[in-house]
Image 1: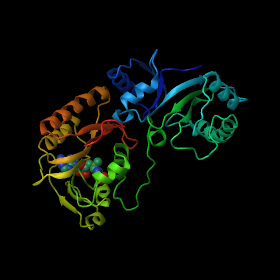
Image 2 (image 1 turned 120 degrees about the vertical axis):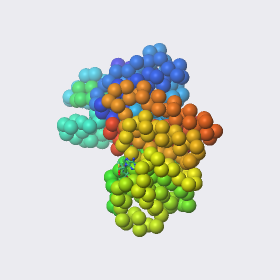
Image 3 (image 1 turned 90 degrees about the horizontal axis):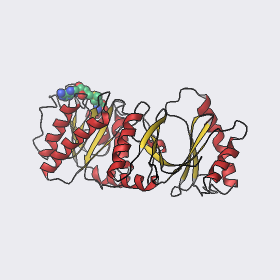
Length: 363
Ligand SMILES: C[S@@+](CC[C@H](N)C(=O)[O-])C[C@H]1O[C@@H](n2cnc3c(N)ncnc32)[C@H](O)[C@@H]1O
């Protein structure tokens, strides 16, 4: 079955409704009227009847989405996927959809958080014969490592009986596989939370932006800093950090000489001079954290901010809209030219990570 006007979107399992509501709302803002259907754990199908998917994806921009980690435009569905010749069925599905490539690479996906090992194992084994056949048919380019600039063929397997065929445009989709940067826990970082800030820095900023916005000699405040995983990320980049927390900071991190520890209440403490960065990893009522961030931004106590917001169990998308409006109001009052973004990171569970920074508005 051929598909037009279909977006295949990925999110954290359990957040399909939030990602779907976000897509419905964001697409409507750019004239794309559609509906969503949860397809499998962490996958949704967003349909735009009578419209093409890619112009809507371009106008919305993945960078502006919170719950959607990555997305592809639908090509077609192979249903049923016959047990005896799955490769042949995919080739036929592509032919039926008039899709001849060439693609730079092929990736086979299984539902996120899949606990049964059989489907992921099959997907891993299947990719190589599939790529060989696609190359033989001239649908996949010859270079086995792929061409980063070419579109990707994404094959989503909800189970053994169906294959969802989709196209990944590198200009529209995430630079990371399934939207998640693969990060290794640094040996000397004081806590695993360090990975959350590192992921945020990769998700929100390009390499150039990271180098420009996080430089040696800059200053930062880390609210709720202990034991220091977020502070560690900033210190690694040469920033001098004031760490505010009643809890103890990691001794080796303090020995760097770049950290000043203030055992104070983060909600009432303020710096004597404005700083470049504010980061905040306090688990508290989101409205309270938003007010704190809004006050810092409005008074220009920081130039950039990254912080977590714990979201309620329901109406997460609607809540974020309210918080975003409050943050934008405070930025407007400050007169600064800053963009608010947020992402439900791989390392986030019931919270989202927000970023306020001087960023280009599109991808
Ligand atoms: C999730 S932990 C932070 C982990 C830290 N970002 C890291 O990477 O190691 C939250 C911290 O917020 C601190 N905290 C909570 N409420 C606070 C407040 N009102 N003032 C200062 N610190 C607070 C807690 O003591 C705790 O250390």
